[in-house]
Length: 256
Image 1 (cartoon, rainbow, N blue to C red):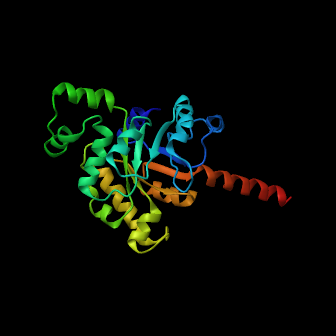
Image 2 (image 1 turned 180 degrees about the vertical axis):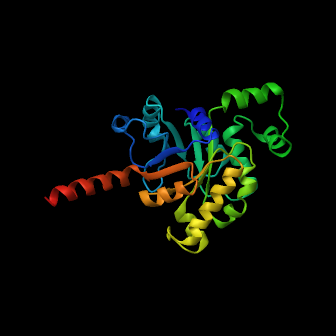
Image 3 (image 1 turned 120 degrees about the vertical axis):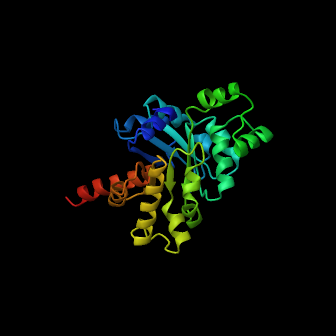
């Protein structure tokens, strides 16, 4: 599944399932992934000393298994977003809340390689340099690119309808740690206000035919959000799932 296949699945209204890879860079580990479990993986060096380039071997290994590979970038610099999209199936950008910034980030992903005044005219007026340029960008160069802004603040939720109206937004992804901190309820993932906020985000996304979801490491919280209508499911990460599996297995063994 490349970026276009992932996009098409979301456009059809299907639910897509993925996880984070924070530590896994050896492509051989892809052979251990269960068939049909994942539609996509988000590689991220967040909270590690790794760099995105170190995930390139696993990006191509995932492609051989039909799994789309998105990359989460720390930067909100449009040039960095374009660079990521030239290599991975798409980009996940953290803490998107300002509308002008959101437009430029989306444009950097789905209007590559336009820059400068030509890009400014396209963003402001919808004016392409030519019909040939429009076809090249939208039907060839960026046809398979997925752009996912992270909704991680009260301001982002307040601006969500306008964010959803930006061309090139393909999914919405909530970071619950940042969002609950912005809401004044840090890490209270079962708080009624967070649950209500997720309901609002999912509903606004659905009205714009854009799937939304929230990261959780606990199956019960992920299932709760799926029951709310989440269609962009990002569950746990490689390290956490390895730890959970080993805890369960060796807990049973040591318990006799």
